Image 1 (tube, rainbow, N blue to C red):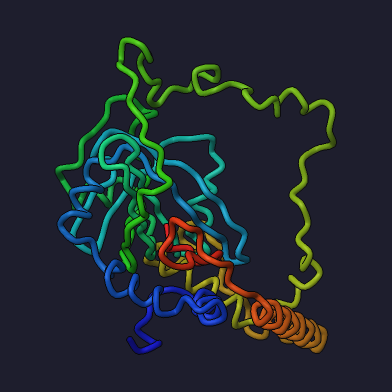
Image 2 (cartoon, rainbow, N blue to C red):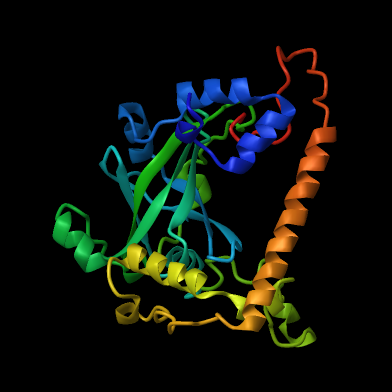
Length: 309
């Protein structure tokens, strides 16, 4: 298939080339990667009670989290669009915050109990207020418990959908209701939510006030040029479908923002670092030799091919 039509990133294509897995990857791309949800995928999504969500902000800092609800809480709107609700949580809004800067997300649904199979869905997200969602989808249920009532929805435009193979997925069984007790859906009771299970709150008096770790490129942040800031603005506008200033998002940067001689020097420095990093990656991969396949494998499975399962 032509390169421009191949799914995946330039990085994975480069590693495939270096490790000799391009042909196998292309077979997987051609056989399994769709740009929509087919009938069986839509049926699979409609019965799931949980999924894992991956997002990243505009700096590339990542967050992974877990979402759950009754079967059907993820709504399949059509073969290229799905939506899931955001309930009241701890107020951090990490995923929504990331989406406001970078609309790309990844979803992994795993059926541990029935089919023991997984489904990856990658795409572009948009945040929708509950009132707007209901105006277009009047059949959405209304839960009487505030903690179980959606405040926001995230709609996802599907760009990739593909299988996660079964070979390493454990086969789990649900505990009968009389043994597990009722789940505390929507509760605000700290103990029922898990309390201080990991002891983080107990350490609060033994550590200095929380301060986010400084990134190694923190000194470069002031050198963001106007194209970067403008891209962040446009990304926010695309996610919310309007002017970010109206939803409390960052305002468009002033013309000439970051266009100083000092900023230009910093940009040159960053470009040099990126070039040096890519050169090192090239040298490492050039030396890498695929291991011999295990006796029970017909062919080399690779180290980095994220879609091998």
